[in-house]
Image (cartoon, rainbow, N blue to C red):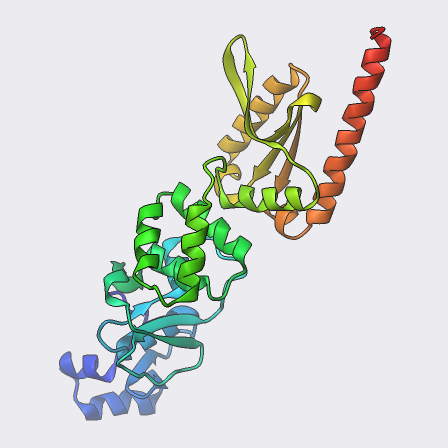
Length: 301
């Protein structure tokens, strides 16, 4: 296992060093004590990675990186995150903490541990359930959608993990969310946007297809077809590459030839500036209505 400059006394002795040699390195300052029995090379900075390696060196059998630490390893988009290292250990054990680490005890951990890069980590399904204790419901919903879309987990795996924790309230929350899972969303960010829209009285058609000559040329995340207004929610994962942006522009132009206007909003718009997003949509809708009335009058309708 890669250890990022961290070594335990037990490992040093197993590698052939004597206790005197270990203590000598500590006195010289070549090694720095992190906690009892765990050291780092003096040239290795004390970072979150170092803390993680140190806590794993002294963790009991059956422990695993979990919660926010597991989310980072699995590539789950959790906001806000946590600067700490999170470790879950079997309930029968205790472990003294250390700066930069949070330790959780669990009675039902072993079925939900996998190994990534040589490190024990809670599975994606278990990680999502654990985080449900700390995240607001919209954030949990968003990570469920994104994890399923990215095929990091599945509804069945989430349901199985939740069913194995019947007395854990967040597991019940995840079970409810799974029962309400809607197929019309491509991402968790879209689900968050839909909640913002509905809370402000805006009810759009989801995944609306625009056709030309019997061929689908555009699919909008949200649309108001009567106004030919399409709304796209551009999450970081799927719209930031140059190629993805080129495809988006091409689709927008094709839709524009049929009179459609496209509005694009980012993660920051949905999560940090929802009022501004709603105001922009309302303004554009009002203008589209006015333009439609003028067109009708000009045509003598």
